[in-house]
Length: 210
Ligand code: SF4
Image (cartoon, rainbow, N blue to C red; front, side, top):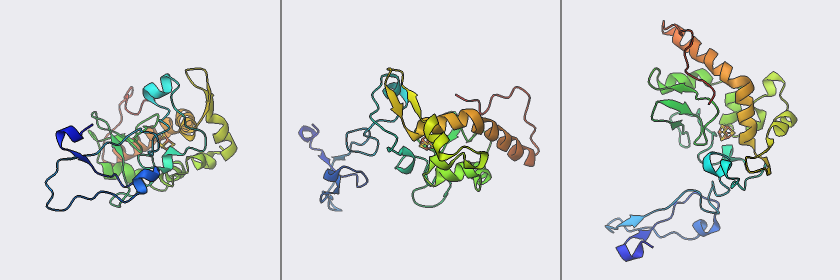
């Protein structure tokens, strides 16, 4: 498609598609290009099954199953707490909301318009639920409050908006955020702000569950 513009595709180097494990075309250092790269939800890539989010969710297009652990893949929550290390990523919305993954959890972890990213992440270090996400093992996020792995699995099975039976760990994550972590994040934020002498106002809408 881009050849007629004289642009050649280069490999991404991180994917499940065996085509991308094939020897890659690496441009010579003095090759001026132009080059292009497509990545995203193509079949075979790390989000090829489509996240149970947005239009894919509303239209019943996600082909993920319970064994599809987006959390442990690139763009998921794995390693989000490992700030400063390779593989540590968070997602930041234009309004400053911080999430541990590109899928976005049901509530943000904090907001960069009022706090530093380092402070938000430091406050989550050691918390069992956020350490479970950091390990790419969301099924473990409720063990400390009595949510067994079986409970988590059960909460991950739903009927999607198109009427299909659907199961994925990100759905269990949504349920756990709704029932436990939204409130917990508000508490953690209040503690962080109090340490800086800031009082959380009544009616403050930060960290509302989406
Ligand atoms: S399980 Fe939760 S934290 Fe992990 S990728 Fe899914 S929505 Fe994000």
